[in-house]
Image (cartoon, rainbow, N blue to C red; front, side, top):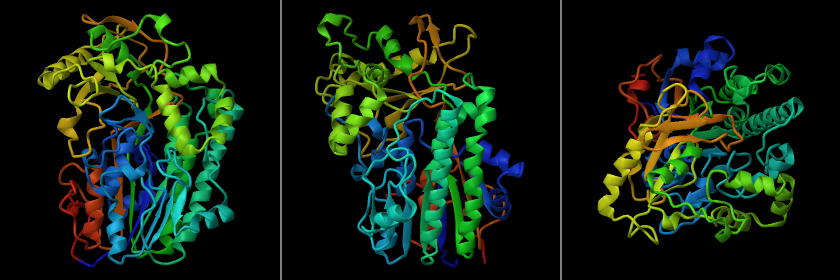
Length: 518
C-alpha cells in the first residue's frame, strides 16, 4: 500500500441525515460527488456522556474513560463537590498527530476542540473560533495567530455570550456573524494549505456546530418555537453554512488533489428536547437528593446548584453587566470564580445521589464513601442504588400521551471505563427526544411539572455523526463490516498513512472502507 497524504475536514456536529438529504437534492454537490467516489458511513459517538468527549476521542483514538474529558464547561472534580472548567492540558492522552510531527511528518491543524498548543515543528492554530475554548487562543509557531488575526481578523463570535434573540432582525444578524465566521475560516485554511503540501492536515469547522445549536428551530418546521415569519426573513442558516463548506471542500481539494480527503462530523444534531431539568426533582422524590427547603438558612443570592442556576443569575444581573465584569477579570480567574459561585448552593454532600452539570442528557453522580469527601453510600450499595435509580427513570411517562420519556439509562463505567473516568457521572439518562418534556409521571414519583428547559439552544447533539473518505486507493461506495465509532478515525488514518497504531488506542482501523490494491 502506498502511504497517503491526508487532508481532513471536521464539520462539527453536522447532522448526517441533513448531509445525506442535501447531497441527494443537489445542495451539497462536492459531498455528493465524494460519496460516489469514495466511502461513506454513519459513525457512533459518545455525546450521551457529553459532546466534549467526542473530539478528544477522535484526536486520541480512545474511549472517553482514557482521556477523561467529559462536560468540560463545568466538570466535577473527583474527590470534591467542586465544579470547574477543565482545560485541554488535562486530557489523559495526546492527539495522534503529535507523534506524526515528532516522526518528521509535516502537519497543519486548526481549531480542533479540546486540544492545546503542542510542542511541534508543524503548524497549529488553537481556539481562533470555537463554541467552547478549553485553551487560550494561541498557535505554533507563536507568531502565527497574530499574523492570522491581523490579516483576517478575529472570529465574529469571539467571546460571544449566548442568548436567545428577541427579534427576527437579531436572528438575522446572528446568522450573518456565523456565515462571516465560516468565510473567514475558509480563507484562513486556503492560505495555510497553499503554503506547502502537508502530509497530514486537519481543519475543524465550528460554524456547522454553532448554526445547528442556534437555529435548529428556524430550520425545523415542526419545532414548537418555529416561527414562519422569522424563517422567511432569516432563511436556513444551517443549510447556508453547509453549502459554504461544501464549496470550500472542493477548493481545498484543488490545492492538493493527490491527497486523500477525509470529512467527518463528531456528532449529529437534532431538536433540544431534553428532560435534564427533571433529574433533580426525580431524585428528590426517590429520596436520594437532599433539598434545603428552609430558605431562611440559604442566602438568597446563592444559586441552587441546579440546571436553573445560570438562568437565575442572568435574571438577577443583566447579561450586559455580566459581560462588562468579565472583561475586567482575567479569564483563568473568571472561569474559576464563576464555576465555584454557581455551585455554592449545592447540597450534594447531604445527598445520596445528585445531578451534576452536563449536556442534554441527565448526568447523575452517586455520593460514595471513599470517593466523595462526605460519601453517604457504601460501595457495596453501588449496583443496587444504580439499578433502582435506572428503573425509576425508565418508568417515567408523559402523562398526556402515555409514552416513555426516557429511552435508556447508561452505566457510565461499564461503557466508558478507563484510568481517567473519575470525574464522570455514574449514570446517564437518555431522553426519547421526540417532543419537549414539560411534565412526567410514574406510580413511584407521581406527577412532576416544570415549565421550560433552561437552555438557550434549540439544537442538541445526537449519537451519530458521519465519516466520508475519498481519493486514490480508496474503495468506491464501500460497505462497512460492522459499526464504526469516532475513536476508529485516528487508527484508520494512521493505517492509511502507513504509520504504527499505538497499542493503547481503542479504535480499529476500518480497512474495509478504504484500502484496495493500487
